[in-house]
Length: 211
Ligand SMILES: [Zn+2]
Image (cartoon, protein in one colour):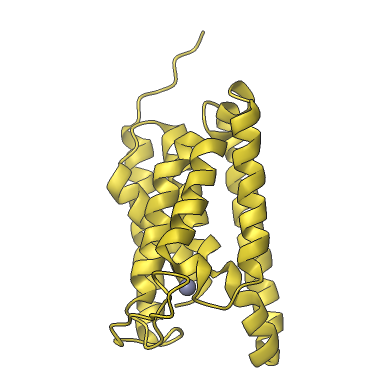
């Protein structure tokens, strides 16, 4: 499954399962779910460079689009207030800083591992989610949901995932390919579902109280 589909699947899953009741909560669910869905494939970049040279330009476009999306969500979070940026600013401490630093280190380590190994495993999920729990607690549950949705979706792929890293066991349900028709359908369905859920949740959220 492609990164864009994992991002929309993570967003839709996080919104559906957490059903936030405030606007900052909706933004946090979108950011956490999308980041959890995206981060697992941080190990795929080397593979694209090595095996699919013609896809490097395409990957760069997707990367720029993802960067723009996450940047826009973060700016929105800061503007609306009472969300992730506010949490980090209000709770700045050694554990919060250590959590954010650990997340960056895990990104670096993950990007240098074999595709579908460490980052696609339960130990990898525990470490990444632990880092987010310390670094930005409001985003931890949506991030976990997005992360789990990625690993669960990859289990349907013909090539399995190293679920119990470092054990060399790659369970797979062998039902679809990464860039097949199922991927396209799931992308549009989860994108539409995310938009509808976000609109409904924001529409029913109480107006912010003014001081
Ligand atoms: Zn994956």
